[in-house]
Image 1: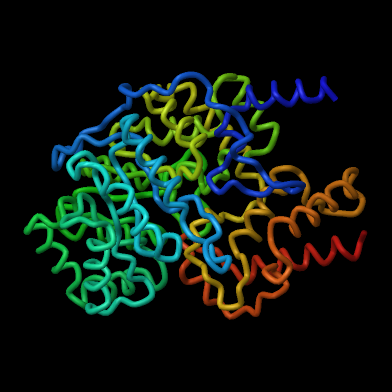
Image 2: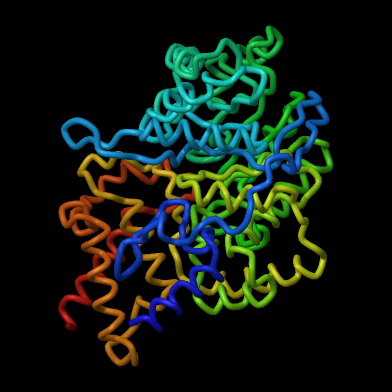
Length: 455
């Protein structure tokens, strides 16, 4: 037993916090991850070495590590309802600012409406000119002018501010493409309103985030409006292997860079998928940089292009924050040889049949109370761990079967599992990754039933 514990400690020390504590603190196929127990901070966290980039359009000097506020830690509140752990949020924000982070990104829809308020409480305890505040016009479900302007004004109120440093038209490119973009922002006069707010100084930088149809990306980029920034999904897997309706990041970044438009990066870890990689990928990365976390490779890749202004990370736990601070304090850009190495790694990862779920929770709440992200992320976790057997003839069938089923019941309550999906499709239109969610839930449910029958 002592030898086993020694081996476990050595493994955790070598792996680092970022490799085992993903952005969502996912359940494994066998047991629940313990983010606090994953590893202690590896060495000192610098307070004065954060890499900064200058916005060429406005002169803002922004920390290369940005705080994404979509995954604040949650606790049980009154009546068992999930609420944001404000005390922990305050500590995380304080620590981030002390260590050079000055960009915070939220949205009205994050954490089902709670993120802006919690972010506003934490940041209002600091001088307003000590950080850059970003939020979004998340009018995907109701894009009337009245609702859109009310959402904008509510964001100012929730964030306890009278101006926004960075304001985004949120997640354009989905649905009916250009027509939906025009309905959300052009035909209702909302974009004209936002441009006037920029002129008045209540919006300091105006831009948009993109998921979906490349025709929308090109159309909005070429409207003749001087965009201050654009937020794109960029990571070493999506650089050339973007799935579903998403667009290769190589193209998106290239179009922004040649126009000298700063890129803000979202999903550098693909919702944690690039920190929860198969064991042989972990070994491959560790062979190159034994003391660095698996996650640090993805963050270094995302932060290396010179046109990147900041890289957003949803840091739920202090371990995440500390690991990322080390990566960006200062950034050690990926070399040309490492770029080739990471693209070879991406080629290997692209062979794994995971569902491109980033745990954004835009599909939630499900009207039938399914835990859609939990179902998809458990499946992905087990794919990466080799616990999705293709046949009863597989050598590890019994072990993999048990790991999947036990982990499924532990991570997703039975009444919220895939077999309760009615196919209403309330979820898919809101998925920025373009996942046909009911189809994936049916597929996973069939797989689970086969495992149960073939026990």
